[in-house]
Each structure stands twice: as C-alpha cells, then as structure tokens.
Length: 103
Image 1 (cartoon, rainbow, N blue to C red):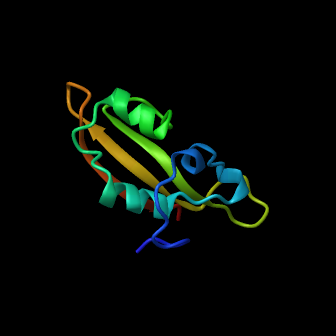
Image 2: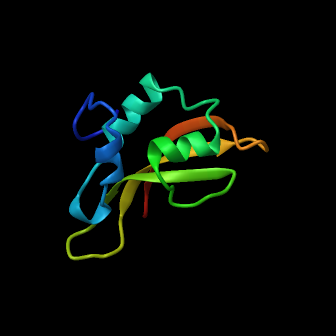
Image 3: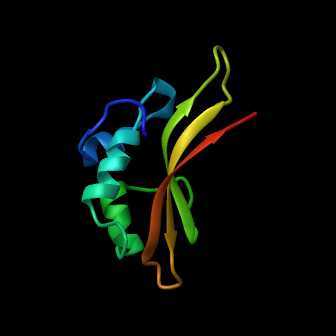
C-alpha cells in the first residue's frame, strides 16, 4: 500500500513540479498512473512527453516518488521510485513501484 494521499489522480503539472526536498510525494499519482495509464508499450519519447526527464536514462530508468530524510540529515533513509524498463527498441516493457530503505 502506498502512503500519502490515496487515490490521487495523475496530474502532469503536479508530477513535473515535484521537489524531493520539500516533502513532495508522487506515490499516489504513480499508483494511478500504473492503474489508469498504459505505460507498457509506450516509447521512450512518449514517456518523456508524459513524465518529463527521469533520474537516469538507460534500459532501466526511474523517477523518484518520495524520499524520507532523518532529522537534520541530507542523506535519505528511505524512498520510493517508479522503475521503468525498456526493450532494445526503447519501448516500455515493465513499470513498477520500488520501495527502498538504508540500514
């Protein structure tokens, strides 16, 4: 289950204005995006038009959804990412939300 605002609809402008340092959370929009939009089969170009530039640009790319910082720290202790995988023709073959935690 994703924390934050549940059932938040994907909003391209709100997605683009995400800033991890101000406590923004794109998790619920990512859930809606995965459920209501058909990412699978989109080209890399179509993904960029919809989501903007990712954190990296390879055959597996990601968008930061949320970062959690310990008090007075600049290093995140946990977060969520939207992981997108492409085939050799730059077509999306898989998209999922990945949660991670530093020990």
